[in-house]
Length: 328
Ligand code: 2RA
Image (tube, rainbow, N blue to C red; front, side, top):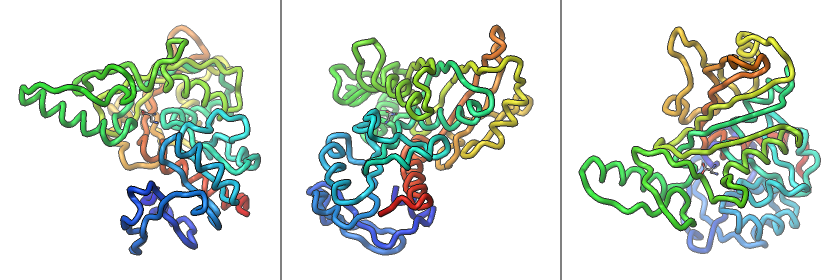
């Protein structure tokens, strides 16, 4: 987030860096100036205009209302408030107007949801949308630094013929752990009573909320791959119009905000995580018409899950708050 704030030259008059007691006292450099991390307490939010939170759901539940009570607008990067009816869930390219209804807390959606809705919104606007079926190919950085280390160590162990015990993935808090190196794991987050994982339910519920379409049919299967960063998604959609061509679809996406079209089978051009890491946009390619349904299309959507999926979207929300004059 700090890197993104710095790169985008966000208008900061003063900056406070807050973390747990354990990190308090550590130094961090921002725009060439050294800052000392302070302990995050309710009182620390006094006088703050915008508070960017990313310290886990439990901390957000405890401190975001305290910050909001003291006049700050919280942009929360956890799942704590995403489905709260009083909390706007915002992707600026899709529903920036929802910021006008905030009550002190704004939720930043789940990474895999963000990149999908950025690609779907321009299509919905032009042709309508009735159904979405997504299968994800998600990077381990979505599960945190420990998961990246686990993948790297397992890869080395396997190549060196050594044994190892998986301890982190698929979910650090679940009972069983599985190998991620040279594997594909169809579990991201814990299973819910309906057989879907929490990640899959996030994609389903958050998509409907962000797009303001409770009636939209959405199904998701979320899979973790041994890719460090960059989530990929195979997305099948049905639109409200028949007989739209692939070229028409490409033309809409080539002009859409936050989207880069990379689609030329004759040149073997399509998005891949390795080419999208470090970039701001959502990359879309492999656009095909369904062979059976005249209103069906298939898309391949890739984005850096740590940038547009997290830090950048939070900072864009903060930028929109400034541009819409919503700060107190
Ligand atoms: C993941 N979407 O990739 C999650 C991170 N919030 O695990």
